[in-house]
Image (cartoon, rainbow, N blue to C red; front, top):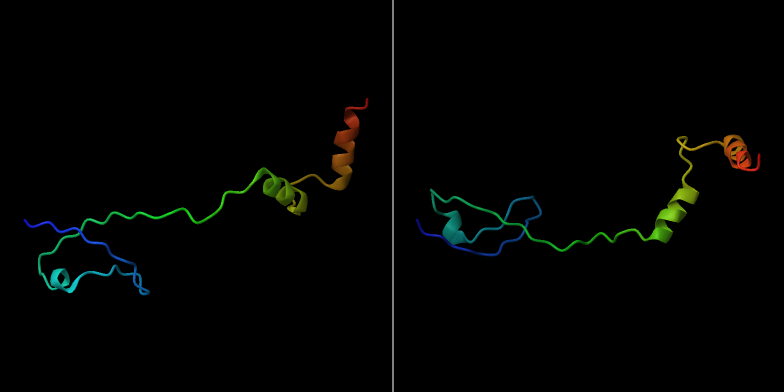
Amino acid sequence: MKKMVFESKLLPDGHLDCPNEIAQKKNAHFKVIASFEETEPEASERDVELSTVNDTSEDFLSDEELKYYLNLKDL
């Protein structure tokens, strides 16, 4: 069994590019190793805080409930 290592790229249709001399072989088997750099930046503490302030989800307390719970510590 002959082994060959080559770099490839992802084609627009989602297939991997393969050298013609290998693509023409009838019994070719492939082992793919994907490596990539992380492109999504991590959120900073400030970003997380701002997203919390701007979140209008119904999962959070209403203004009335929030005032009630914040006033409990004064009792």
